[in-house]
Length: 175
Image (tube, rainbow, N blue to C red):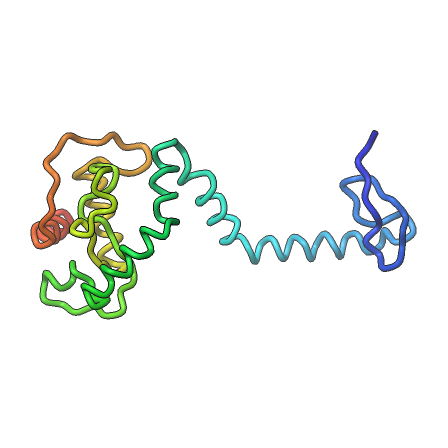
């Protein structure tokens, strides 16, 4: 039996087969409706992409699903706020090179969770970071630790000193 739905024309109760939205009497509205849906879809592509990222890409394995779900807990929101208050919303990576970047609201693990899973809730392993530094640090972590999609974790010594990380991040940038 084919799937059916009610005609979208106001006060029309005729049933139409999928994928149509209007009955034969009101079919002239079909093209306009499909065009408006396409326009809406195109304007909301970033929402669809972030939905795919959050529901598929981030949860590509059980470990990643656990890591991502941690960021949705009350424990994380309290830890995050404590770190923001402790660091006064200043990027600690910029601060290491004597630059002040206020209103940074991202809290980052100094040693990534993938490299040291037991320290994900350790407040001493957390620091405020600005967007630019976060991108640089993520790239550096991929090279140094082997984190990220498609990489294999390397057996390297975890670096907890932000000053040393900044030096290594900037050295990699200029080499």
